[in-house]
Length: 119
Image 1 (spheres, rainbow, N blue to C red):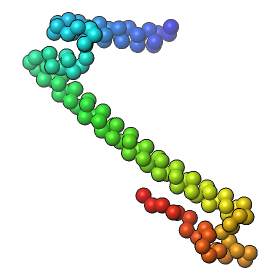
Image 2 (cartoon, helix red, strand yellow):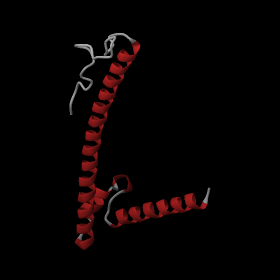
Image 3 (cartoon, rainbow, N blue to C red):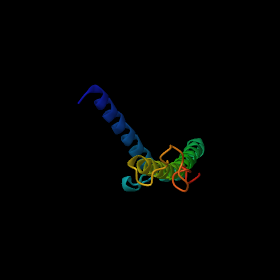
């Protein structure tokens, strides 16, 4: 293992050891050890700070999940537009239902309106 990996591994082990020690101090079994359990068990200024940090983390997580969902909807919409545009381009180039007449003018009722959907 390289030094960076070894350093990361020892940092992880130190973090886990510290959390286990905190759980032991507050009477939380290792199988039940979680940030929310520690936040509820901790008292004083440290407990308050831990609960505030946990609330901020949960709010940030919820906002990220909401934004990811919106990004997914936007991506599906954009892919739908690309699919429609590609289909129109293929039809126009293949000669089937071409968009233009023999003199280069637009044919009526075919491809005149390329964008079919709007956001």
